[in-house]
Length: 252
Ligand SMILES: O=C(CO)COP(=O)(O)O
Image (cartoon, rainbow, N blue to C red):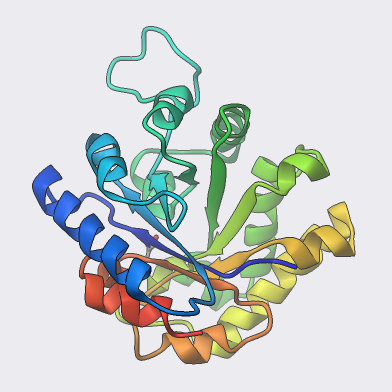
């Protein structure tokens, strides 16, 4: 049976001391919470990984990097490899966020390399996909999402795929305050689960966690999470305050 996950994506926010404080607050709130119905993960900047790892209980709060390099090591000034991320004690990496695809020209081929390196280094991958407003409006969004997933994930074996979490994040809903309706999100989540079933079979599809991201807040999370194929959220803005993040964590 698949697990529910609520993951924060801090993006390029917080200094190290601010991030350590926020991580401690989340860790303490998770430790104090009873009967949580989801796994909690925080996705933090590279600079924060080691310091945040030191103040959380990794068995209660998972730790994600927000990216890793498409090369394993060498003369790539400024890049951070999957092995480096894993050596901090982080257990997840977020890959393929639309901000990285758009501003840093990440392609499905490049993401395929990143996914392979992340898995080879023992990291679980939160793989983001999602369409622009233009594709939503011209009706080709399902084909687009299919191409994103097939292009970067479907070379994996079923065993490897067990370490993939998919996050559906419609670009038009990110940071805009304009959430996809629960029906709009559920439609795409069901399509994604269907693609996984066609490729890997029903059991693997049933076991795959599919998150929704895009203006998810404590107020709309319960409705989104009530849908059968929505297994949690990838949270941007609302993950930057422990109480709003916990409001989503406890929304199941
Ligand atoms: O991009 C997101 C998470 O990866 C969503 O961001 P917001 O929750 O700020 O819309």
